[in-house]
Image (cartoon, rainbow, N blue to C red):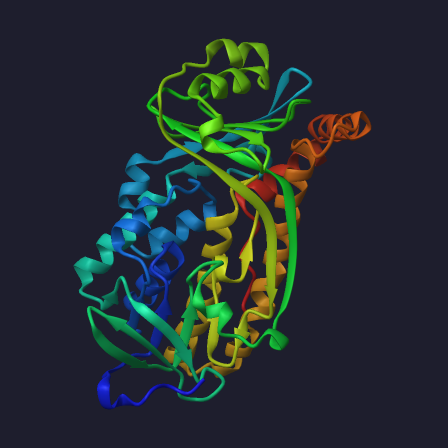
Length: 404
C-alpha cells in the first residue's frame, strides 16, 4: 500500500515505528531508546484502556532480566513475589514441582502484566520519547521497500511517520498482521472447546504458590496478584455467560475441584472482576515481511495454561531488540532476515508446552478413558525426576535463542 500524499499530513521521521503500546511495544521502545535508537510508539487505544486489560502475571527469569535491562525492574523487584515452585493437583492430592531445585536455582515471579505495562509507560513518559495514543486509521505502507512508513490520525491531525523499520506489536486483532497479503502468510491454529472463567478477589491466596488442578469436573487454577489479591479460574463452557455465574456458584465449583485441604483453607469474598476467556493456540509464519516485524500476540497466541503469553512476547522483543541494536551499532544487516527463523524455534517449543499443559489438565469430553490417561500421565511425570525436570525447565522458561 502506498502512503497518502504528505500535503495534508504532518511528516515525522524515526528509525523504528512501533505499532502498539502494550508491554511488548513499550518494552521494545524502552530498550531501543536506551541504546540511542529513535522510535515512535503508535497505539489505537487510550492509555487507560491499555492499563485496564487484565492479564496474567507470572514472569519467567528471562523476562525479569529483560525488564531490569530496560531499567524498569525496581518496583517489580520490590513488590513482586518470587515463586520457587508450583503444584499440580490430581486424584485429590498435590504434587509440587520444585522449580528452584530442578533448574539449578531458577524461579518465576508473580507480578501483574498491568503493573509491567504501567512501569514501562511511566518510564517512557519520563524519558520524553514520542508516543501517540487513541490513534485512528493506522495504516502500514511500503514495508517491502527501503522506505516504509506509517500513517494515522491523532486529535484530528493526520500524520505520516517515515522510518527504517516497523515493529508490529499490536496484538492478535491489530492492523500489522492484517496488512500482510493473505497469500504471503501461513496461519496455524488450534481452538479449544472450553473457556476460563476468572475472578479477582480481595482475599488472601489459598496457597503461597500456584495450584493447577485436573479434576473430573474440569480444570481449575489458584493464582494471585499479591498477598491480599487472589486470581482464580475454573474451566467453563464457551456457551456460558458471566451472568450465569454468581460468586457463590464460582466458589462452590472451585472448592469441588481442589484437594480437601486446599478447599478447606480457601477464603472467599466478593469478586471485583469477573470474565470468561476463550483458549486458542495460534502461530503466524513467517513473522517478518520486508522491513516489518510481527512481535508478540500479533504473531502467536498460547492458551494461558503455563502463563507463557507475555513471556513469549518478551523473547520476541529480546531477539528484535538485539538484531536492531547490532544493525545500528555495528551495521550487522545480515541478521535482519533471520528474525523470523530465530523467534519461531522458541515459539514452537513454547506452544508445545502450553498445548501439553492444556491437554493434560482440562476436561475435553465425558470420556472416562481420557480422564484416566490424563491422570496416568500426571502420575508418570510427577513420580519421575526426569519428568518433573522437564516440566520445571519449560515453566521457568527455555533459554533465549542465540542470534548466530
